[in-house]
Image 1: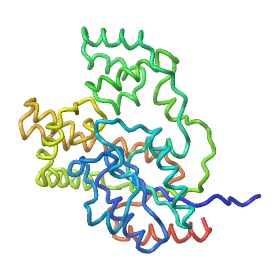
Image 2: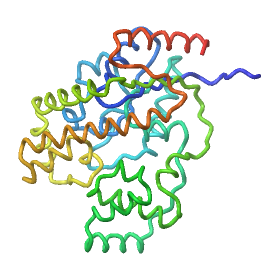
Image 3: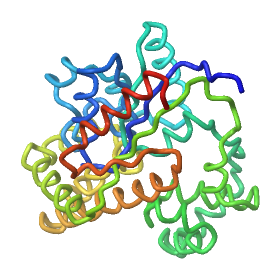
Length: 316
């Protein structure tokens, strides 16, 4: 049997508020790794507080590639991430170091390692008809249709997320296959790194929920609403952009539109974050080759370090 001589890479994955960034920084102090962010909100400049972006001091000490690389007015896709992350990993490998990719955006990890399915081009006629139906029935009605056709896609798309709902239904109509299945399949391309996957999976979900509530309150106290007011004042951003659809930002935008009071804004923000964590955990459990680590165990760091040491030594 031939040896796998591909260069090494590490995926450190986990739900929101599980302590991924702190652990990645700790690991970078001991091992020859350089960090790459895998987060669909951290790519955007100006989304600092609501995204829990590492502060300037942390990034100065522990640089992360792929943070602050896109203006929020310009959407960033999984294909964009795959191209950017591949270049970052190649540069890290060329320096004789190991890329450590840290984040919670499962679609980005999947696109990077497995490639992207070839989805059909947009069909103007189908889109026009779906838009007309939504004007009569409402987007929540089309969301219920999607839930019947593709429950997995519906679970991660909000009932008023017109752009993504339209695309999911369009793909099903054009191909006869669920969007979630086509995204899962990948392109079958060879991935040029050998990967160790570490998944932070809490055994006690209630402790994660408590951290989510505490962190959301801390984000609000740090100035989330002020940050979103600044974004709104630009005049070129709107609620349908991927950056503004990020958890916390969408709820803050609705609150500043006068659609919710403060208490409802807080409840919606915490609930949306918990739902995000639930989806992230579901995806992580499907990554059968990942080593699960409980972020609430006292020996988390030592267990992660043991795994890295064995991997970098070629023992696993």
